[in-house]
Length: 153
Ligand code: GTA
Image 1 (tube, protein in one colour):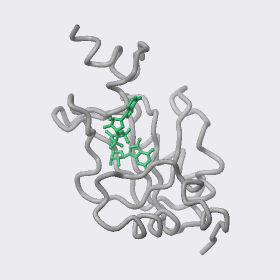
Image 2 (cartoon, protein in one colour; image 1 turned 120 degrees about the vertical axis):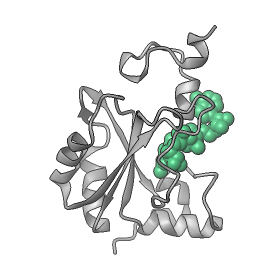
Image 3 (tube, protein in one colour; image 1 turned 60 degrees about the vertical axis):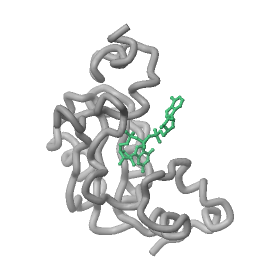
Image 4 (cartoon, helix red, strand yellow; image 1 turned 30 degrees about the vertical axis):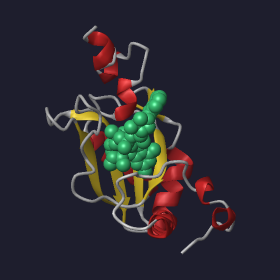
């Protein structure tokens, strides 16, 4: 197991994100973030397919599974996924090499994740997709155009 000593002093250095619905203590979540083999991948196109994710992330190590993020009402991809590796080391290589590179011509962002549990594959926004898509002001054709709040005005 590779520990980065900086993260022990400042847990936010491992990831700025904390899942507000995490089932466990703050300490448990910090520990999971430091030891898990799972990455969250954001800013995907809604059109990106699971096998493209396997292909790209498989270059950094053996991928155990990919869980595509889905709109919770439509059950269609909504622009994120979780990638689980068999080892922490392979996940670290992927985070270093793939985060902020392009997939389907979009700059994707990878982040440590505390681990997938059933239900986390669904967008939590009021409209079923990701929360951040409801705050977006730009037109993003690969993520449904305008955000759905603006589109309905
Ligand atoms: N590991 O960065 C991440 C990450 N994100 C962004 C989502 N997930 C992530 N996991 C990791 N790292 O399983 C995971 C979630 C869930 C799934 C879908 O992806 O754990 P979501 O994106 O629909 O919702 O999740 P999430 O993550 O709960 O919302 P977020 O972005 O943190 O927002 C929380 C609150 O902040 C919102 O309720 C809103 O009040 C506010 N907010 C968010 N974005 C903005 C914004 N642009 N402006 C103002 N307020 C905002």
